[in-house]
Length: 182
Image (tube, rainbow, N blue to C red):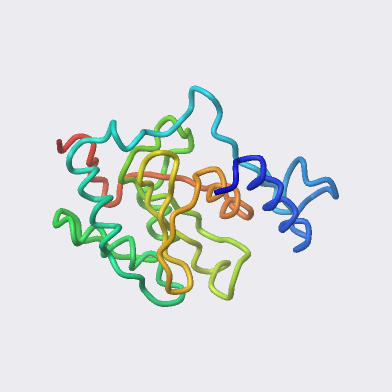
């Protein structure tokens, strides 16, 4: 698995090839005035899986057991993972989930089981209109479903790749704070 510096270099090169960077060096911002790279700074690390409670860890298990959904159905995959847990049945597309439930931007407050979303992104036919949503599964990893495949990506890479057009935010689906359920 590549290290953070390699991921950063590869992503910035890709954004440059797609003409999504404000400057040629790619050090600053995207053409949408968003940071080109979203670092998780020391002291701002998200919750580790081993620090999560039983309900949070159960959701991660449910996410791993949830089969992939079809093209542009990332929100359906997240919702099915929560349905498997049996405590939340919320539906909507990524922008609806983003605006309704995602209000956090400090990675210190990113907890296992939170949804992580953006209302729009520049990839694929549905990205601008339908955004993207995934699930924070601990240890600076985000799971999502893209093009009919479930994957797990490093947090910094996910936040940077999907934060090109709009600020990525996170929160509890349905306002149900799993960290308080025990």
